[in-house]
Image (cartoon, rainbow, N blue to C red; front, side, top):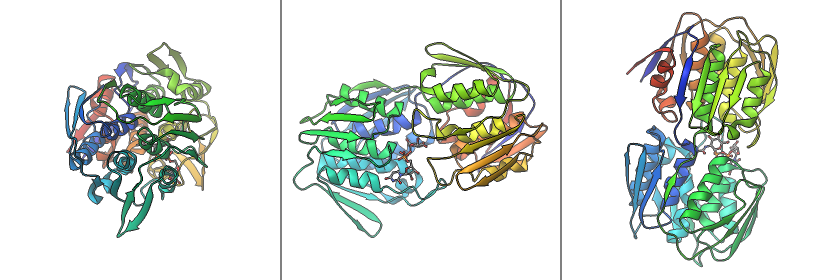
Length: 417
Ligand code: UD1
């Protein structure tokens, strides 16, 4: 198990670049399965989740090679429409193969993911959405078996909640369905819009991606395409908060500040300096941030994947902040670790009350998941003395070169195997 030893106290300064979004690449990897031939995805980060999705694709029969941030995916005519339990368990996003495999093969078998560290996270909306397109599902021995004996056909699908994954699964199936599909109350995340752009480059006919109503006119077949993955707003936001929390000044390059409007507004409210151009943002932090309230919501609301990093910042705010987590039922598990560093935070169901303290003190903590792990590293950069963050393999799932990038900005972090 890998760990980071972080010596706090340095104000970070300089420029850091971000790569393509994890949450976009993973869906584009499965989207490639819709068209036999050679696809190229550019700006792809070397992260564990991309590797894991590569293994899912290899199981299905495709070949994936990641070289200098370009991922080549070679998809054969004949595929195996299955995703096995060991891979689905390691990465919930594997469930996104349902749509494309049904569309390509008319059948699919995917082991059902269980609950995870962020709560139960069911896939009921994915299944219901695909049922509307004519698929039947049965759960046998923990494996979800789907079929569309008469092929998929366009339908109106309205979601109770704009689930990112469920919207994507329906989109991935609808592109090859007969007729028109309309998805209402669709997720509006930039990664979903980027998926639609890639699918359109493959020959799909999708309009309205990035809004609450997406229209898809099914086509007979798709062709392989080359696509540059949208920059990772969560990676960008994490480095922006690293600048803020250390009272430093960090410029994040190769990002889309427009995708971080809500988060940057909140950083300004906390007293941070924020300047932005089209593809860069510079954030500087005050000695102690001002307290504020925020609630996580589907895009364009405050991103749940930046909630733990923001809480780390607010831990040393002047005053009391209240945050509400609306997307996940259980995203507060890391709070106990932050409290070990001296943060004064109480939680009640969806809410966390953060009473700002003047300083944090370094200690050993455990990273429970990707974003909470990043948050603990940020808190450790602010804390007096040194901290050991263990189980950092979680962080490797979503950040390429996290330690190297932070050290290049002046952090003092040693990674140990
Ligand atoms: C994606 C992102 C994740 C991000 C989340 C919300 C990927 C790989 N992951 O996850 O990093 O935090 O969007 O922005 O892109 N739900 C149901 N039933 C369903 C589907 C979802 O109850 O069928 C619930 C989930 O349990 C969760 C909430 O809806 O509480 C949001 O989930 P969703 O928007 O689907 O997120 P993911 O696609 O899983």
